[in-house]
Image (cartoon, rainbow, N blue to C red; front, side, top):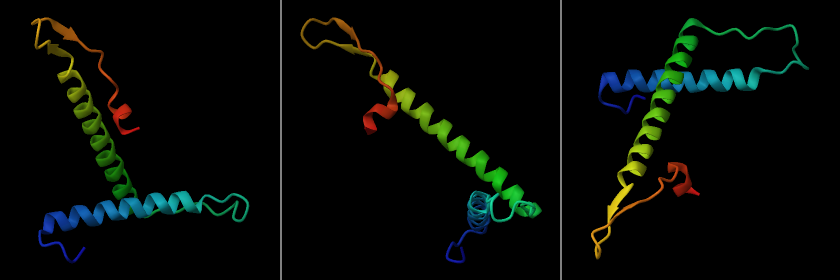
Length: 99
């Protein structure tokens, strides 16, 4: 993260990378067969980074879902060019466009 010029951006980047690293640490350390009696130990800053990462990811997912719903509802009411009749289309789910 030394290549980032802004100190605030560098701090947030390091925090998010530490959160991702902690999530991977938890994911790959769960092995009850090899080490059943050794509990997973996380440092305080790892827990903070993980909670911050969950918050950022959930806010991002909510924003994407809101934008997708907003874009889908914008196309609900269209005016027919010939008759001047208003057509109401059924909104599609935003994720349908990606498949």
